[in-house]
Image (cartoon, rainbow over all chains, first blue to last red; front, side, top):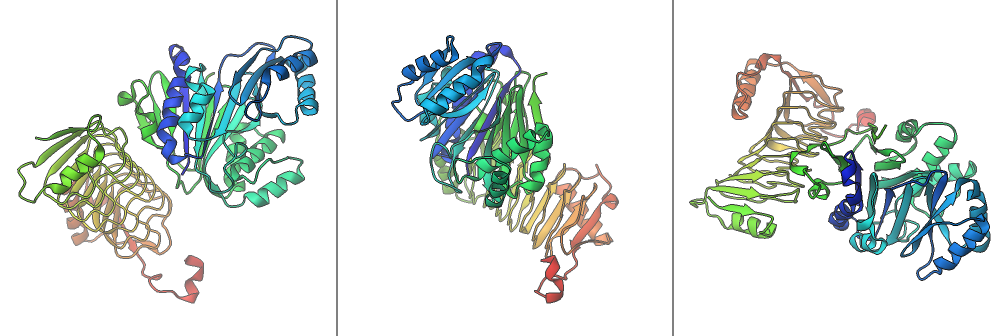
Length: 298
Length: 229
């Protein structure tokens, strides 16, 4: 089980509605993954700055942390609190100082993702409720990917929720189960990667992070995954400029894509797409197995 | 003609109404609106009626069908017409994986393409796909006929029993124990009847198809074949 959605807007006039559309898609797939949910939204950037999405225990004093980060940065740090997450916008030149401050004075706060445009939110709970807690329907942007999880390979925790970040402005969601994740995890630990969970999808994200660190492009990394990762998977990766899709060669896990003049969408099931504007006239197709699809703005 | 709009009527009500129909029912033509990818639309019908579904459906549409003709004016998700017993299912668009799975009888016609595992474990159903089929189609196919006007993906007919496969286009690869066989006159006649039933008779020369079936080497376990299982 598990459900994945992705939406890439070609028509800028839809951008204010991105979060509302994706929230609807996630809500439809609640029954494929009622354990936890998460999503990555690619919104506006602040030139010269990076956005860090922070996650803390419920009730955390984010305002106090924000003031502390401003002192460390030596400048104002715009921040937006969304339930258990806070997005801080930090000048690139001060990123290292802010990260050091977080590591030293707020070790209980995790960095869920970082990028010029990407914000990642994820929590345990029913996907429609998770989306509402974070205020997804009010978020704007060019594209987003989301995930509803039915846990099979590891515990239901926020750390085990998707998306998993694989680098700046990059993240991964996964539907399926990997059978060689323990062996791959041991290998990656030898290469210096660290893992938070026993989760198989985190290993896939780690593998991609490592491959790109070794110099492969994202497309090459996805191709390499076909040989390195054994098991069932549909991966959707979010990037600064769009998203990519890869299904394993056996292709047990369902996947549907649709496109109109105004948008391109991915859904584990067609049901997830039925409220998108103009869906009745959309071109609808099933992505081929073992084939990398990318949809990006140029 | 009963028209059921699934935007307003629960799917269970539709299926229950279809299940209540007697063989001599006068309500022989049904229209279903707004399926919106729902699962199990028009499953388990046991009456000689026509059901037209206007839009894309999700999993298992027309599963276990008996006697009825179900037409989907759209795409179908996984397992369309699975375990069909008799009657017809026609999909005007594409279908996802496992179309016609385990079907025991009747005819499934797909105007577009079928994804992986089309006709998996088919047990007597006839399937005509006007486009192409994905990998592992007719896997462990026991009886019935699969006709593909386009191409077939990898491992066609893997571990096949006695189903007969007719493919017009290229076959990427044959699965274990599946081999090409001669296309004889009675096969051409059979193929002609199937193309006729699918509404494409005369559009394509039956002599240009190639026939595939079982080499019958894997029916029973034999230690010499261990590498093929």
